[in-house]
Image 1: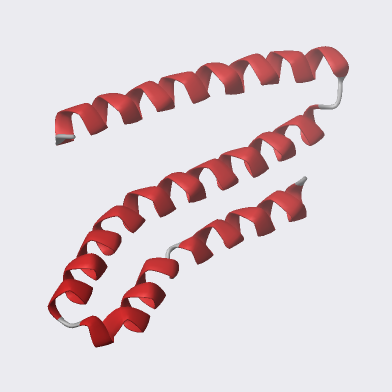
Image 2 (image 1 turned 90 degrees about the vertical axis):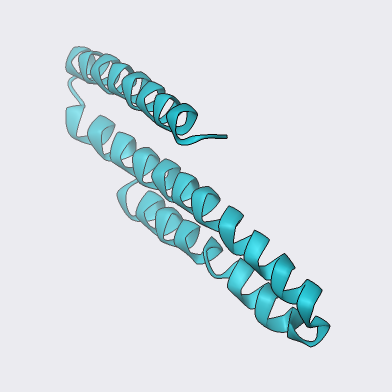
Length: 101
């Protein structure tokens, strides 16, 4: 996947999230509970962006870990640790989800 496809996918994601935010803001105005709606929306955005960041970072790290293990099989534990490190970013998203939601 080249950079042009990534950028068009990210711009599509940004456009869709903007539409959802506007629609939920309109719905929140109708119910009168706008603060809760924006807190839930913020928690969802935090978790979603953490997941996207983890996915984007784990690909190159996993490829490098496989290359490292192919050269020296005794470095399996190091490769596994480096591959699992980005997953902690999602835990911060879950934390925001539970604190704001």
